[in-house]
Amino acid sequence: MTKYPTGHQTSLFSVADVPGGYQVPPVEPLAIGVGALQSWKQRILQHQQQVTVNAPSPQGSLFALPPTIEDLANSIDLFKLPRQNTEFWRWKAEDNGVSALYFVMDCELPIVLYVGETVKSGLRWKGEHDCKRYILNYVSAHRPHGLPVAVNISFWADAPTNTRDRQKLESALIHKWRSPFNKENWKYWNTPFVSES
Image 1 (tube, one colour):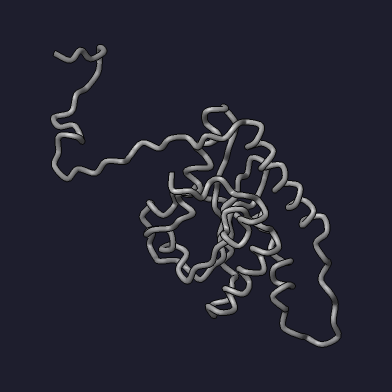
Image 2: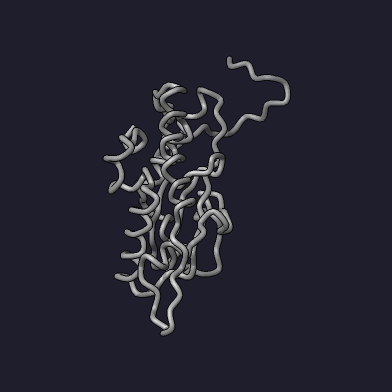
């Protein structure tokens, strides 16, 4: 007979007893040493601080020319965008959202971890998205060391509605910030959080 602590409420069925019941496999923390993890984050922070410090100022013009992709990329102050929990997609929303760029950040430092684009900001993360796994691996790597981590997501809803233009802007931002979860930048950071585990 199983002994339960006083006040413990038992369930009629455990998840294991229900055929076809949903089970979340346990996540093994990524085996990365505290020094290696902190060093990895500091290298990214140093690069991204240089991007912020050395951001070019907007060029004035006598003629009203449309902004270039680089102008747009430099105009977005992504650290001032409203932040949301990365589980926002689980909440009930009244609409599907808008065309947007989004930024996954560890606001503890702060560093930009991922840059993405979407045609519907409310739907993009409802399905499969590799970045969800990267975030889970990243956060779980902090836990054994007791390191603070604050991963959030921000949306920039002024993104171009034209898909090609939005993707060009996304690419410029990925290049500018060298966001480590974007595969284009794995070569710079030897990103350990993108594995299947």
